[in-house]
Image 1 (cartoon, rainbow, N blue to C red):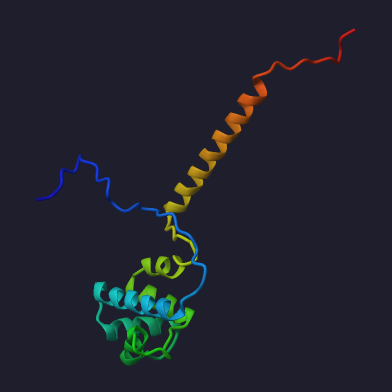
Image 2 (image 1 turned 180 degrees about the vertical axis):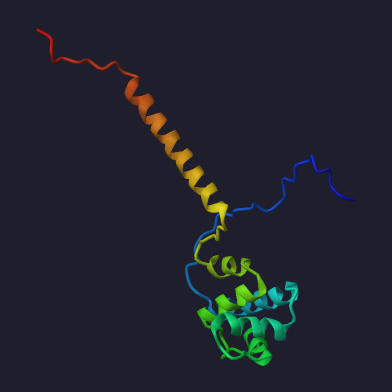
Length: 152
């Protein structure tokens, strides 16, 4: 049974979670997580692996990238086959899995904002600044200002 659309879900994950940076880098765990995320991106992508590899090659200006190379990038057992940043960017573009960038930066306490989400964050920052300025003005105007210049 589907929940009523008018009913709030208090257990839903926040859309913009607050993150803390990890104190250390667990390289093996990070490597495995990235490879699993890339494998998920391939599963969710409408293109097959050879097409993804061909699209990556096109973005990188290469003659080709083999399906075997793509497989090595996503195989957790292949530690020596880490994807370069340029190839990762081409992979993201080729699969359309922009969410992968968030996966990469999450350990650093960062959150990826896409498009107008950045404008929304700026609006919230300005609202916070406005509240701070309003409180400061309220404090300053709570006492009358006595002007002594110009009096005889």
